[in-house]
Image (cartoon, rainbow over all chains, first blue to last red; front, top):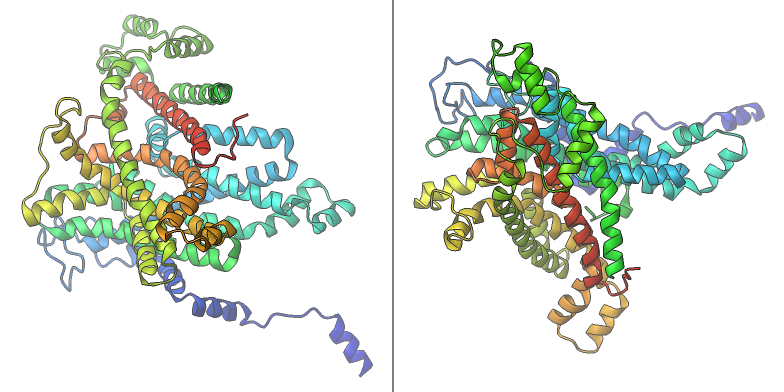
Length: 298
Length: 316
């Protein structure tokens, strides 16, 4: 009996396997719109990844009747070149959303490195980082991406890194102020006392505790990244080509038929807006859930 | 105050220098040679021709010399000549900047004129139907790309009522009325997302301020609610809004490129696009530098405007 109690006392309390599901369903009940948006986000990401596997036709199949209004066989109609617009939207998700996600990855990684190190060390490093941010903020967003494309050409990572760099100042500032918030707390002092080095403290103790604002700023920035990518491909400077669709480019391509065939104008713009709305609402829900102090701010 | 302004401008100089180094260095990273680009054909690329072009463009000098030459001229108001049209870059910029600045200004006026009242009203009716509706609307506005809003605004009125703004761009000083008829649609398209951002921040900032004691005092002494809101609350709620507005100007100014392209307005954005498409690197370099210059100046102006709204801000 005594042995059993001792063994029970030593084992760590385990979260039941349905623990996170329970938490998620609780959050969903409190914010149903956020939950629906979350499901939608997964669907959009699925489209971007699976793309060609789930589209009913090929993006470049031109064997249909041109400028057909939406119908059962073509839910979003066909365009001037007789291509199925729904399939082109699905194919285009890879460019439109893929670049946005890559940009977020870039801005988040740089933001974490610069934000935590400048917030933790302060002093000269902090000053240097904030000067670098000043310089980054001096470029109008789109002009910077256009400049990058003009120099390095129109490939996926050029556009993604350029958009990521635009979003980096915001991410860095958020991480930096969160780091300053935890820097002087007792557990950091305790870690220092047992001889942990700065790198270990930053990675093992600071990073997990500033994760919530990092996730929030990333989800807010996805919407901006999608909009910038769309603008770049609308200008014809993105990675897309006539055979490699993206949503911004689709809107430009359908320009001659905006007046006569309404769906050619509505579909690409609505795809962009729906994606951005979805990530915005999901980001709001995440923020309310993870970081109540930021509620209502933007 | 004068001293503060002077120091604020001095602090802008290192930023501008860093920006110019990045632009200059960036253009030097371009693969391929300038000579082939200027001459346009492989037959013309004789060593003689190429060395003459390198000499004309100063490319035969060390990079550092080239930078100081370019930057020194830029300070004196000479951004060099276009590689394609051979016109001075600054001349074209000066000719076209009014359109871009007017578009940005009109969009800001629209965004502030719509966004602030919406935010104040939303905060005033917190959690009631108008507030919920406005929050819903602003999320939608934030999510629509400006060029799609522009698309809808030119196509739908034309389709439904046969309305179209006058064709053929005129400068604002030639015919202000016709110019405004051509500019207001792109300005609304550009300012819509910003108005939503401003409305959302104004709302949350107002909610914070409305909880303060001095607002209760103002109400207790019998002031009309409109005066409480506009004089006591709004003015104090403005600081974070101004900060955000300054940060958003980069997006706004960048957005002019897309709308100028969509509406065929002869501004800096369309100039940038044509110079990117024709690989006119001296022009690209000058334009990007000019854009950065505008942003830096506007940010200084935003910093200085804090004092207008909050007398506690001291310029020292």
